[in-house]
Image (cartoon, rainbow, N blue to C red; front, side, top):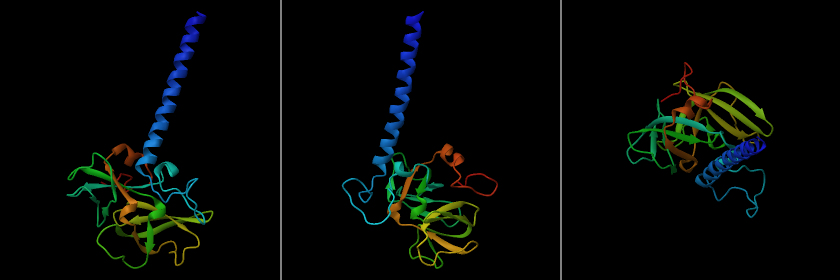
Length: 200
């Protein structure tokens, strides 16, 4: 009886260790995929406050935008007027299939005038502004009801007030493209459309 109980505990410990190692492997994979040589590290000095740009540094802090992958498999056509040009493309992304673009909130810039270029820009309105220490978090609503987030240092000049009409834009290398995952879209608050359904 004691031997059976001991064997049961040993098996449970192994299962827990297996789950922990699996989670660490996923975290490592995210870090490697989203590696940026400009991230702060032990051998990379930076001046002033900075955040790591890899996904593991701030898991879940993404704007997820669903849409259709355009020919060439580096662009995503979302609802409305938004076209996302991605600098990084994950395995499994195929032209004509559903895809998911990801842009971190601190890479979404805000302007009152239309930026140049055809992609990675869209019009929206400021729904809310939240103070997070030295950072302002903007909740922005697009014409189709989709909501995106932007984070800006409070010291940034000419930041728009609540209710303002703005242009959202980001650099191509700051956007990543993934195969569509309905579970990610439905489980996130970062992409919503009117009626509470994810925009696709």
